[in-house]
Length: 250
Ligand SMILES: C[S@@+](CC[C@H](N)C(=O)[O-])C[C@H]1O[C@@H](n2cnc3c(N)ncnc32)[C@H](O)[C@@H]1O
Image (cartoon, rainbow, N blue to C red; front, side):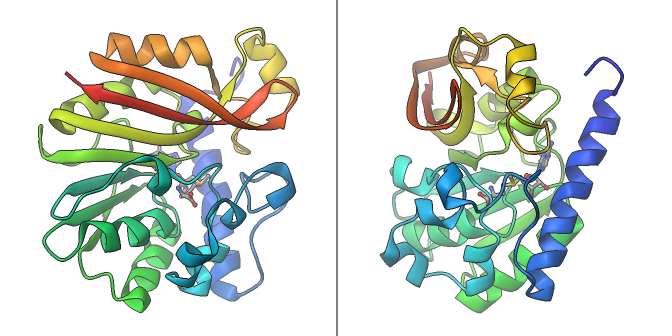
C-alpha cells in the first residue's frame, strides 16, 4: 500500500466490482482472474452454496456470487430478525437471509458500488424479497443507527477494506447487545507477513488485504466482542484460507 493511498485503493476496488456487475448484467459472466470471483476450483463463488439454496436464487444473483464462503450457513438467522450484509454485491446473501427472517424481519445490504446495488435490487425484486433493503455506503461508516441490528453477515468483503479497525468498530456499534457476527472472509496463516500475502494475489482479488488469524481475533477483541472464533474452511492459496469468523457483542 506504500505508493497507493487508501482512497485510490478503494476506488480500484469499486471499479473492479462495478465491472463485475456490468458483466453479469450484460449476461457475459463474471470478471477475470484478478477478481474475487466465482471460480469454484479456487474456492470462490456460487459453488459454496448448496443446491437447495441456489434454486431459491435468480440466475443473475448466483452468477454474481463473488464470495469465499456461505455466511447464511454460519449465522443462525431467526424469524423477525434484522440482518445487515456488509458488501452485499449482487445480493445473494441478502436474498437468502430475507427468506430466513421472513416477512416480520428485514435484511439490509450495504455496498458502495452503484452497479452492484442496481443488480442486487433487480435480483431481490425477481426473487420476491420485499423485506430486502439495499443501502449505498461504505462498511467503514455504516448508515444505520446504533444497536439496530441482530446479526451482521458478510462474504469476502472485510479483506477489501483499507480500514479494518473501523469496520469492526462499526459492526460493534450497529449490533444490539447480544448481537452476532457471522462472516466469511479470506484469512492468512499467522506465518505470512503482509508481503507474503501480497505475493499470493492482488488486493482487489481478495488476497493481499487479508488479515491473519491472530490479527482478526485481536481486532474483534479490541472492538469489544466475546466468543471470538476464526476457523479455516478451505485453502485458496498457499497459507491463505476461506474462513468463518464468528463473535458475539457482549
Ligand atoms: C468480493 S465482492 C462480494 C460480494 C458479495 N458479498 C458476494 O458474496 O457475492 C465485494 C463487494 O463488496 C463491495 N465493497 C468492497 N469494499 C467496500 C467498502 N469499503 N464499502 C462498501 N462496499 C464495499 C464491492 O462493491 C463488492 O460488491
